[in-house]
Image (cartoon, rainbow, N blue to C red; front, top):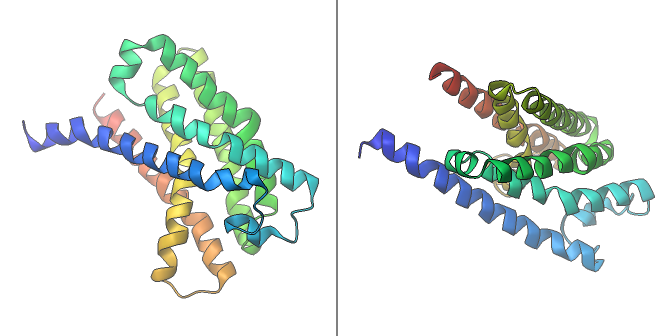
Length: 213
């Protein structure tokens, strides 16, 4: 087996396992918030707005639903899964897009308005939430219109933004070891880096798919 074929076969499988690992890890991080543990992790930085009903509702909706697109989305890009189980592919797709359109992206937008890091971070997370909703909606619309090439392209863009949940948490752990910045500046930098590189990679993948068609 050539190196090129080896990577084509095993790189997607490795990517799936990595994403599922981080999905489980995020679930583990999320559980304490449902035990009213407000003295731990992210919620500790939100003491000034914890009492706001709209933020609190958006927070719990977001952490309850955002893991679902990570899980359902990863299976949508497995060619054998799509071909062998087309009905399940559609069901997973509806779960993925429905969760984003009705729950995860809208609640993310509300949370973005109250984000840490000042106006720079708020703008980043607002753009992220809006693009996430738009890409997911266009992907669904193209699928319904049987424009499967465009459907795939926007699904890739949508999932790239879904993965920003993982990117953000990795950057929070890693970036402070490389940059010495004020907390608000650091979070603003992380806010933009959590999704822009993902989207660039998505565009490169889309370009590669187009060039081989």
